[in-house]
Image 1 (cartoon, rainbow, N blue to C red):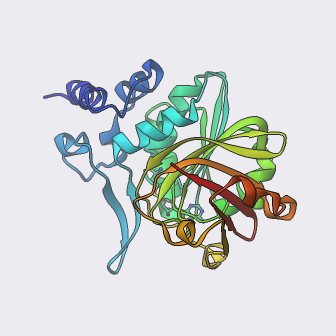
Image 2 (image 1 turned 120 degrees about the horizontal axis):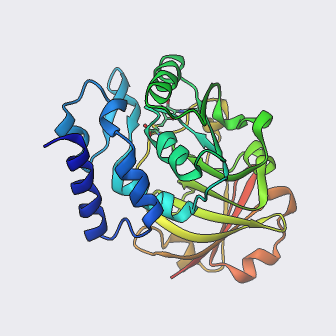
Length: 277
Ligand code: SAH
């Protein structure tokens, strides 16, 4: 099967299993040649709905190209539009940056930040070779975002974290969206989509996900204080699903939050108020 047919069958599979519903995201998956971003992998393997490791250190995976159906769900949460300015943290292979570049079109732009210099260089080259001229790869620590292109309409974090950094808060436009894989001591890892209004982030959807951790100094911060309305809520992690999640800058959070949420997780930068389903 040629690569175009392989993309079609991947898209049909994602539509069937419900991870893909919007036309724009489907069109992006049909347009971006995933196999070009993982040249060491057989073309047919490149279109399986699987994550593939692209950089390891000892037994640790430092980077992998994400599972297509998981990215599809995250992109749908992000609702990226033509003309948007997008920041991605964690370039990896550059594949997701290419999907984003397709979604924003020639009027929009994508800045993607990668901490590993070899990965950044390779992704920059692949994106240029494939004609994604509106995607810029920056080598650096994504905790700081990229102030020179801010503010952003959309921020997509492609690595696991437990907090929203001051830079992401500062660089996200009011009315903008951030999708971020969070592990905040609530039993599991979720990519949470938030919309920013009046300086607070309101959850708009949640996707189960699996990412490599964001590395760097700020990642070593332990899970912050957890406040719960009842002992029941405190220990009821895992099987409980999140119904609602609101995030505020910790400096601006008040005890009021506890009255509205089952559990409140106060990280150094961000306080998350969570209501169970
Ligand atoms: N979006 C990628 C997959 C990302 S994997 C793709 O489509 O292929 C996560 C990436 O985040 C890895 O490449 C890893 O090196 C990078 N990363 C980890 N910590 C980082 C940091 N502090 N700043 C920027 N990138 C980071």
